[in-house]
Image (cartoon, rainbow, N blue to C red):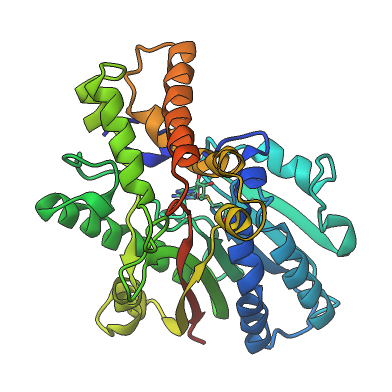
Length: 370
Ligand SMILES: C[S@@+](CC[C@H](N)C(=O)[O-])C[C@H]1O[C@@H](n2cnc3c(N)ncnc32)[C@H](O)[C@@H]1O
């Protein structure tokens, strides 16, 4: 299997801080649900025994979106266990901009870090996939991940006539769901092994809610259909080749609540056998901040389009670039991206109604059995 289908070979959010600057909605998701993590920590009733308390933010990107959640969680933890050194381990894939993350932590960006506010705090990073073992067994107190577990380890097949599994049909849809099932269980089994008895795992996952809604598809114009139409348009005009269009597939699986919870409920499943138990699950929709600002405040379609597109680009560009032939040089690749996102922006500016990247998440809290 080559880098073209293995997610770790090409995936990264847009670097140099672009991701968290543009994707303020992902921050809203975490800020509004930080209480779930704080409550999980309280239920752990951690002993103030001077031992290391290790937490991890898995699939952290540049760290800018989770910084305020961690300020609150770590502040709470510091008060709860004043004698314990706290280790924060950020994890993502090898192509992630970890340099930006450390610059943020150590106050070299315009994002306000929590690092100086919490004493006896130690920050590290790992570029090992969350589908693999990241930590030694029974060494993790609190695992956390937001808006990341929908990334699967590889795309199982090309999707005919679409770029995302939400538009796939029949066997292709089934193949993505099966890869999603395998990766989800692998991730949970690894975390179950790494968590200390009584430890907690808090996951805010992109998914499909009880009403069939998912990211950018909450009743208006579907974002993934728009991506697909514009990418197909470029193929139709010869800007990209038909092979490049076919090779462009988001390495993602959006799961339902049933799919998320099945391995945690089935006593015969390896996840359940490994001692991971479901404590809490709920779905929420968090409104697109750019659409809200447009609708409720400025009502300027051009401004909405200009402010909205970077958030789409921050996380999707790696997938569209990944579909292009490796022979294309950097300038050509960039020109195609600019044309593609430029067309999306023009579309929104011309007819803004219905465009929105509302976030649809399933929030899970799991406990490792004692
Ligand atoms: C949409 S971003 C979310 C970033 C941040 N957690 C947030 O909520 O804003 C998804 C992140 O997950 C990372 N990711 C994808 N697959 C991963 C894997 N197998 N292991 C670790 N990180 C992964 C991506 O590189 C990306 O940085």
